[in-house]
Length: 186
Image 1 (cartoon, rainbow, N blue to C red):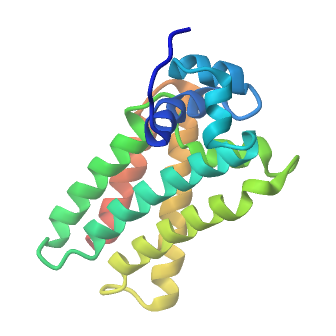
Image 2 (image 1 turned 180 degrees about the vertical axis):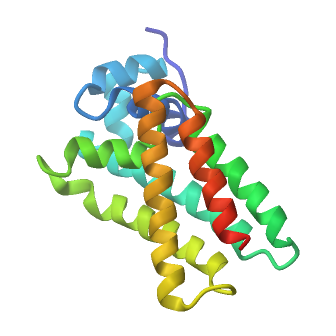
C-alpha cells in the first residue's frame, strides 16, 4: 500500500459513513484503515485503540451537529420559518443523505448494554438536541410543555430514522420532520 499523508480529520471523515452503516462491532481497525487508504499502524498514530477511535467519531459527529443546530437556533437574524428550513436541511444532511441512519442511535443500540463506554457522548448528543428544540418551543409553550414536546420530537425523528432503515423508505423521516415543523410553528 503506498504511503498517503492524511490528517486525523480526513480519517474521521472517511470512517464515519462506514461506522454508520456497518456499526462498531462489524468494523475492524484493519478494514477501517484499508477504507481510508492507510496502513493500520497509521490509525494507531491517531487513536490508541478502537474505543478511542469510536469516542472521537462520536465527538466529531456531536460537535458538528451541535454547532450547526445551535448556530441556526440562536441566530437572531433568521425568522422562525427560516430556522426550520435550515434545521430540516441539517437533519437531511446528517440523517437522510448517508446510508445507515443516525450513528449515535446505532452506536447506542449496538453497545449500550454490552459495553456502555460511549454512553456519555451519546447522552450529550441527545440532550443537546432536546435542549435546542426546547429553545425553539419556549416562546409558545411553558417550560415543562416545551421540554415534553422537544423530547417527543427527538423520539419521533429517531423512530423515523429507524423505520426508514427498516423499510428503506425516507417517508418516515420526512413525516417526523413535518410533525416537528407543525409543533414548532404552532
